[in-house]
Length: 90
Image (cartoon, rainbow, N blue to C red; front, side, top):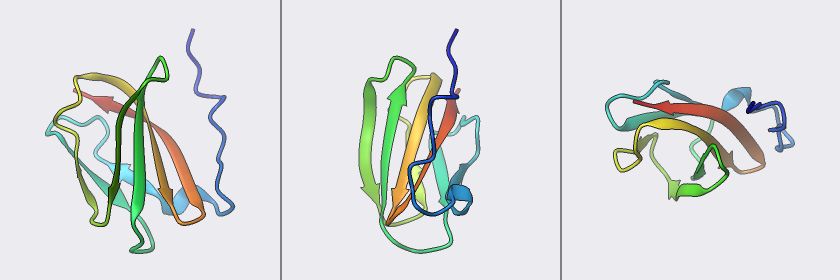
């Protein structure tokens, strides 16, 4: 059985300020929510831990149309803040 309990918050700041929507994704785009306008480092991993996407975005929009449907882990880092969440692509 797979558990997300092992993914701890890594940033020095609470990650409630970082997030994304929609989830599940069906249109191939996600929108990053943040309280600042710094560049965001995005890493997306499959459930086996293989990195399927790594990029840096300066806008709030991220195109993930190249990722096949499934369950993923998305890690968003902005400055000293990191958020790790489950991402569902349909």
